[in-house]
Image (cartoon, rainbow, N blue to C red):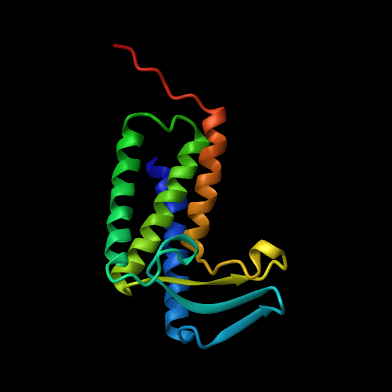
Length: 162
């Protein structure tokens, strides 16, 4: 697992923090927009004190509550890993991605008091027009969830003998 953390989690965490630092330094919050692909992909600086897709954003204590949940999630992941519940490469990759994403957004809550979101796509479909703004850490969490779902059908936890 240490190898996955060093080769996957750490570089993604660094990319996440570097990209957010660049956004904070170069793009004003919710007033400036950098068009990457016209009518499809833009970059802008959004403050997110909530959770995925900006849910529960703006509550007085939401940043502290979700920061605490992130710490709890990291503790739970560590405990489950030590119990051998992530037996294969797919689930271990997912956990490395999840750790990177959780740590990236938790770092934002500490440094900025909110999570820095900046990637915005307009998919031109009814339910996703535009898709909620997100970041590299969010992408890691979503990919981790997908990989864990797949792993739950493909990998069997090791049976421990008494």
